[in-house]
Length: 174
Length: 313
Image 1 (tube, each protein chain N blue to C red):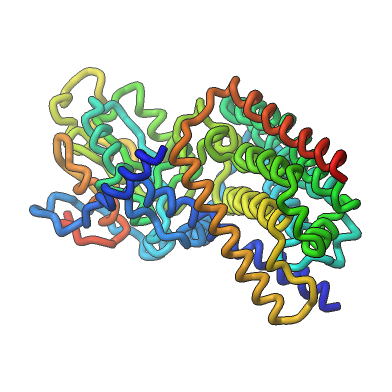
Image 2: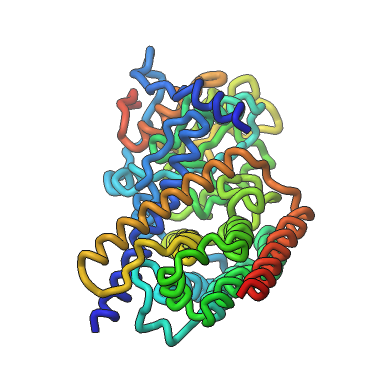
């Protein structure tokens, strides 16, 4: 037990400051309501929805809660139920099987709510475009506020995408 | 009259301190994970947000679902008026003693379990059955552990236990007291949903106890339940702090004593918060079927506490 706490003490803080992006890849596609931004600005609950992703994006999203990217310092936490959520983090092209669950999740989320679509697949279907199993991009099913392109995008960019929806960092407007 | 003012101050203080205490534990845990973490006042932002959000209620929900959050919150507030938070002989002491405190807390748990069952989701029912399993074993231990103290003080009245200990400081380190403290500490972990019994930070439904029951709640209902749970944490910490280490609790109703009582309460809660955070960093969650064994240990400790208090009386 002393060894564990000695190690904790020696390691110190490993959280890296979130600097400006090298290239602004985050795309803000909708005008987010000011009042919603004020309400959710300091405390945001995220529900992650995998609409048919290859899980590459999920691996990057897992990094958000780790010590290096630490999304909790921005007041962002992941929750287990859409009823608790303020923001849906959707990954992957929407498959036929996940269309209805995705729509139901959106309906189960109380207003005001935001949607951030993560990864190339969520925007363009990526390598899955044209597949019989895929019905299209995320914005075909539910309204999307922010796209974070990349295959997969870096955790820092996903974080910037979430913060862009809250108007806490700048983003490319489309 | 001043006694009732103290009661009001105490209730309001518990309401205001509870989110801060939960946030402080989270912050210490984040630092122990070498993360920056959210500031200790983060839960206040969460409450403000939840009160401003829409409420979505399942079409399968009955009146019970809407009613339960108020019962949970109200029963927690009622307990804060009976527990010696800052002052010892309180005017409400005559209305409820240790048994009242234990069963008011159980009332909240009972309604939470009913609300979990009400909507008919798989996880709600699972969480409710687990919560009742834990509560059924933990509840008698709380009563028994405090009974150990009551036996020494000659009264089940919490205020009297505090004043008796202040009058006779030697009993604070008697074996009965120490055993009762250990028993109540383990039960605190179980009843407030901390590791190793329940993980407050889990996202995996199958490992949940408390969270599983509130998955269907949103908006202000969720805010009330969360606030109630934080109040419960504050109440258990106060029982641990003020029944066993009562120094700082005001015995006279004057402003200087009040200020000292508030300051000492905050220090005691912070120390317990750090201890919980360290425990949660060190231990892993117990397998569900091992939980009764842990609670069995705490029950035996409480029983030994009562026996030793009785024999050494």
